[in-house]
Structure formats: C-alpha cells, structure tokens
Length: 417
Image (tube, rainbow, N blue to C red; front, side, top):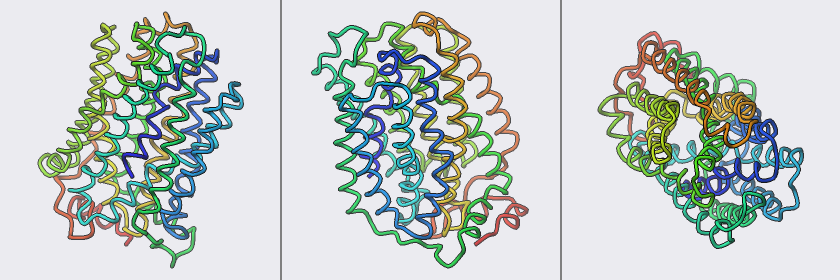
C-alpha cells in the first residue's frame, strides 16, 4: 500500500513545476496550482477522517478515490488541458480526493500493527522506496519519449509520465481491495462530539508545540517541489534526470526509517523530531550560500532525514497522543496543519518569488535564506517548549506513546478516552 501510494504521487509531482513552466504558465499561476494540494489538504482531511472514523472503512475509501484519481490522471495524460485555470480546477479536484490518504493510510497501518511505535517506520519505509523507484522509472520513460533531445519548449515526456501515474493509481485501487478491513470505531458518538474529541488532543502542550512547529516548517516545504526542479534545471541539470535527482533524499530516508524505532527508544521523541528539523534547516542553509550544482543535488539527502525523523516520527507521536477511536482524525489534523494551511501559504509565497526568468531563479540567494532563518527559529522554539521525556514502551496492541510520555498535568488535561 505505502509503496504504490507514494509512487503515484512521486511519479508526476517533482516534475510538475518544470512542466508548468514549459506550458508558459507564470509563477503566480504555478503557485496557485501547487496550492491546490494545500487547499484540499486544509478543507478535506478532517471530514475524511470523520468519515472513516464513523461511516466507512479506510479500505473502501482508498479503493474509491484511487480509482477516480486514475481517471483524472488519464485526462492530464491526454494533453487536452493546458490552460492554467482548468489545470487548477483539475488538480484541486484530484487532491480533494487524494490529500486525505496520506494520513488515512498511516492510521490504517498503525491500527493493524501490534506495536506501531516499533513497526510503523518499517512499513512507511516502503512509501519511500516507491517514491524513489518511480523517480528512476520516470527518468527512463522521459528519455524513451525523447525528452532529453527536445527543446525547453513543449511537453517533453510529461504526458507519458501522467500515463504512468494513472496506471499506478489504478493498480493501487485494485490492490486496496486486499487490505485489512478496518470498520469505523466511533459510531456511538455524534459527529460533533467526534470532531471535538479528535481535536482535543491539540490542547496538550507538547502536541500544540509540535503542530505550531509543523505549520512553520511546512511554510518552507513548497520550495522543495515547486522551486527546486526549476532551480536545478536553471543550474544546468538535464531535464530527464531531475526526477532522479529529486529522489536522492529518499536514499537517506530509507536508512532513517529503518533506524527510527531505535531513535525513538534511544533519544526520545523530542530529539528525534528535532533531528529532522535540524536536517531541513541545514538543507536550506546549503542552498542559501550559492552552492555548485553537485552540492545542490547532494544536499537533497538531508531531506530524507528531515522527513523520516520529523514527519514520520511526528505521526507516531500523534498516534499515541490521540484516543484510539479518533486516531484517523488526529492524523487528518496533522495534514491540515502541514500540507494544508502551511503548504497553502508557502505555495503562494513561492509562486510570487519565482515569477522571474530562469536566470533570476538560479541566482536568488534570498529564496533559500528566508526559509533557513525561519527553520532555525522554529528549531530553537521547539527545543525550548517541547517537554515530553523519553517515550515509554506502549502497552501490547495499543501502539503509539504511553501516557507516561507526558507530564502529569498533560496526562490529566489530555484524558479523553
């Protein structure tokens, strides 16, 4: 499930910025099109979380939306749509279906693992492998389509890439029929009560600090996929190899996810999350100092550490902090704060900052200096305010973090089930 889910997204998303530029779409419209994911992630995941908490199994939701998603990607593969307004509408519709699946797939996996804190990293690892493998597949498809020989004007293999994404989405939809059935757990409560209980976890001090840090960090994340492909192309990297270069971060992410259970047990959730935030801070610092191309590409390895420790480690943290009947809603809340509101504002900002030509993009040091300074400030804030001690072992079958991970005051304030 994880491998296919992230392969679908990783097949076209890293190259979308370059593709939109080739279609003659300016930076503002590119920012709005990238923001479609964030708009959907802000409006939809909590409702989808409530849906699978109360009315529909996660398995059925995944079968439905990835079947419909294959149809949307097939429309993009046809090349019929190339106007910015229609592209925005199509991507908004696509992400309205797909955005909740990152959190819901994590919730489904954790619910069916005996010990999510120890086992989830190895499961999520396959998402990284899927993203990385499809990057190389896409490079091969584009070379076969003649992308390496075409001029900068034109689609240069992107239609074939969307076709690959559509095929993978259809395979995922069929595969999800084989996933474990996870019937809703919260059918006994009203929708409003479920929503309150799903959000109640945010009242805990550590959860609130984590979510604030997540929001700030994800203001800078659109630069990774919205700006970096064009930045690398402007620096001289051949277009068909951009997808492969963007997948380098997943190499170190594989290692990070393999050792994530050890990190959580050895240094605790606070320092594991801080390690991920420090990696992203360092990544933007390397870009802010006007590096040579090999440093700009190689520094992407730090992205893997950042994602594995901060994002996946944070998901494990939230899973243990939420009542077990409302963990899908807790994961949805994380998506709203991260790929929702944070990425929405970040995408619009990145679009405005990249309205110039390629040479301007390649030589704009402030483009990465501001994210570096923001992430450095967030790291200081997180270390000062996040108080959770080293995590204790969870009870068998419950997963997540044991209540003793929190201070006595937070245990009382956060008791919801």
